[in-house]
Amino acid sequence: MKWINLIFFSIGITATFLACQSNSTRSGEPELLFEDSFEQGLDSTLWIAEIAPEPNSHVYVAEGKLWLDTYGGVTVWLNQLLDGNYAIEYERTVAVDTGANDRLSDLNQFWMASDPSNENLFSRSGVFESYDSLSLYYVGMGGNTNTTTRFRKYEGGGTKPLLYEHDHKLKANHTYRIRTEVIDGVTTFSVDGQELFSHRDPDPLTQGYFGLRSTYSRQAIDNVRIYRLNN
Image 1 (cartoon, helix red, strand yellow):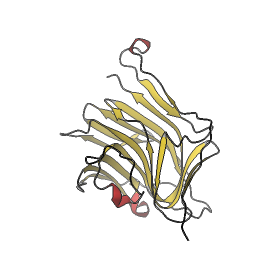
Image 2 (image 1 turned 90 degrees about the horizontal axis):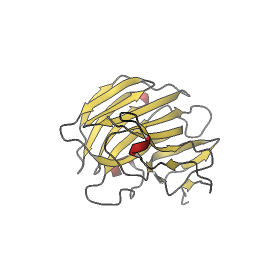
Image 3 (image 1 turned 30 degrees about the horizontal axis):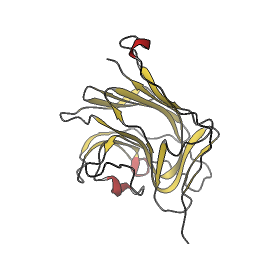
Image 4 (image 1 turned 180 degrees about the vertical axis):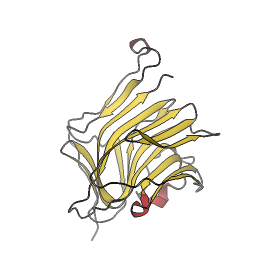
């Protein structure tokens, strides 16, 4: 049987890109560039889902949240190139109840992602290894069935050194508040106000795409916001 990955969306779109107007924001204050609370559905041109071809694997919006509900790997990319100094914020919950894919694992994220050999980044299967050739930063929080939390830099061509490791473990059904910053060559990843990783890159990635990443789990995402940081 051929399994078909489904992406559900509605005509109503709550996501908003906001024009940056230097005369409307005082120096030093962040400017809101983007927000999406998923109240009216999923814009499938704005959010690009790559889902491994496994049964019972779907990306959809329900009850005002984006759900990654998959048996295999999944990446949902925001189709907006980001550069300069910025911050990404969102809320995310790993659901553990009676769902077929419920497993406490893999609250993961890509950012500053690009493909050195292809202008079109959105061309992969959702299988984790298919992203090895990209250039990006990656955090796998609660990976390997909630035994590891790691920060890597993918350097393109399959090289992806482990730079840092943390003892953070996921809690089931807890809504995490995730914040990622990129400021002048330093990128940080914070959870509920606690900084887990900070990396000053001697060869920093200067532009790329943000992607929500997971595998074999059911997770809800809400209140995605991106800010320009005017330091």
